[in-house]
Image 1 (tube, rainbow, N blue to C red):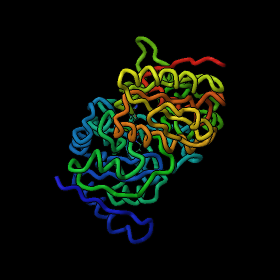
Image 2 (cartoon, helix red, strand yellow):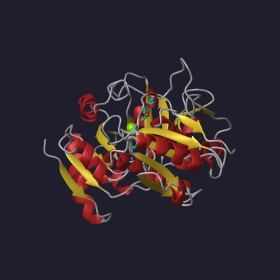
Image 3 (cartoon, rainbow, N blue to C red):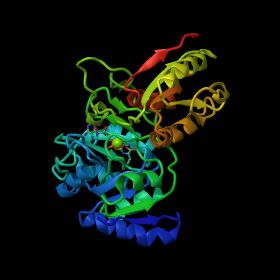
Length: 357
Ligand code: TXA
Ligand code: MG
């Protein structure tokens, strides 16, 4: 299949491309598009064939439900059985924006879109091009992240092209995204509401609006016999080709450990990379590839760069990657929770304690 790639300029000139994308979606085709979180791979959410095509293009298991993207808050009522008052409060505060809500679906939403569930995940993105495209597509666009299954979500168009060229009809190039981690998911069909995936909208921000919120118990640790409630969270997403280990510890303990292990690994022919903050980069002189993810404590930068760095390591054929821990300083609150949730998944929950704490 020929994939048309169109550069968005962020002005009125984009209208023709967004209209064309909308027409493709209405006709059952697939279009990748930028959102404020990561790029999405869109299809008509109300067309079961489109959802089937999305699964095929990604190589994704079809029991993993898709998020339905809307462009008007009132469209919530079109695809749900009931809209609880909590949803309206959250929408008022966080929509449009990086929050996905799980509600009970009505019959308009095919089970092909929801992976067989009777609930539906709904998100109203803030990206203006995404919103226009959804409007031209008829208002309901199912979109998982636009990566091949098992690869990090794309935070720049070049990664969408890498994964999706030849598999879908069109790619809209909006440059690098702003947030870089997928939306926060909250399930409002349970009492109290449960966070199924942490994101830019943090637990504290949700708590401010709802009296009580719980974390899905599997977010930060693996528990025998307990499956995550968002089906997609059970898969080992975001897995780099090289083995990733999180090195936890204080002061120079992490760099000391990593440098010592690197020497041993190099002696066995391995190529070692490290993910660190700007302030510690100079201490990893022995490593083959040192990638700076941002300044210490700058969680927004760390979130924005994480997936790009994981992809770059794949291209450099690094066999072992050590990452500093980016959530400890504030007890893994705020955006640090989302960062560590993704990093832990990418590492298959491998963490070494380097001491010094
Ligand atoms: O930021 C985002 O949310 C991006 C952009 C493109 O909007 N989309 C995204 O979609 O991350 P995806 O498919 O990669 O992740 C959707 C997650 C999966 O873990 C899936 O299992 C979960 O949402 N999910 C979807 N519908 C659900 C439902 N009804 N109940 C529980 N979890 C659900
Ligand atoms: Mg995804």
